[in-house]
Image (cartoon, rainbow, N blue to C red; front, side, top):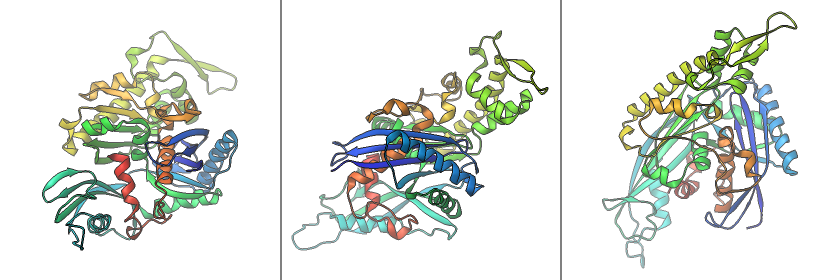
Length: 419
């Protein structure tokens, strides 16, 4: 396989990030993904992962991609673009078919049987205002034998498949595509951001034993639960970094932009980890004057809101019914995971171990440039795109307006991603 370019685009509520990579190799296990360029821009026109100003969003996308192209010294045309937010809805669906018997096969399950069972499992009613984002194969059952990852070649008479259906708001998806198109690029595929991030920051072992990805974004906090290498539960909470910044602005009587800078430069998630005598300087209301604020006070404001968010995540885990199956604990990623003391705060809310998820494992080139939690989605989207390229299948790329009828073949790629 000749080197090919792939780009991942994460349009968040506070920042837009792009990762451009070069992909070589002819299989998942023999491939190399080399980071060539990274770009970011402050996002305009996005609120809680929904486009509210398409022109401002377009400009953010253009700036971020052009910065990445300049760093990489290449031009890209298509970008694998993330989608997330409260409009995402997911549920499991099952399908059952009789294995087709043809002369010479001796009841052997063929790829066509797998295609048929996928189609049956996806035969669900999706409202006209919603769009299918993913239909992820979870497991197969052959003649009551469950836990099968790839049934092709096995003997059997009855094949059952469980898939995880992920849908999103049709208008939200179309507005993302419009913003990218107006910036001069094409959306290769819309990909759910927590799933993309999991490729960049989680191991297969973690997905096997039960682990939760908590993505602390600007507008929302997204939760994805993995167990037995399956996606078991997805949720999006309408609170994130912007909520914390609002609290700081109100609590310290600061302009919103100044509150954001204070959070990034001096913020901490645990007040008891900050020197009570330490202060920082901000501009006062009167021109040319400054005032000093105790860093401990800033940390107290952040701690109160982040503690509330983690409590809501913990409640979501209980609601999922999977809280007892999470031996791998919690992986925190996204921009909010960079806060000093965030792990120590999270450990108060969750029973299992907590760690920060940072992309970079298995990446080459300028991998150091993405070794921060805020690049998890963009790096994961580039990894997702690399696997789609390596699959080298005519059906490998879903159309921009991916519909139920257009995903029979490309769902198979998720077998590699999650199994």
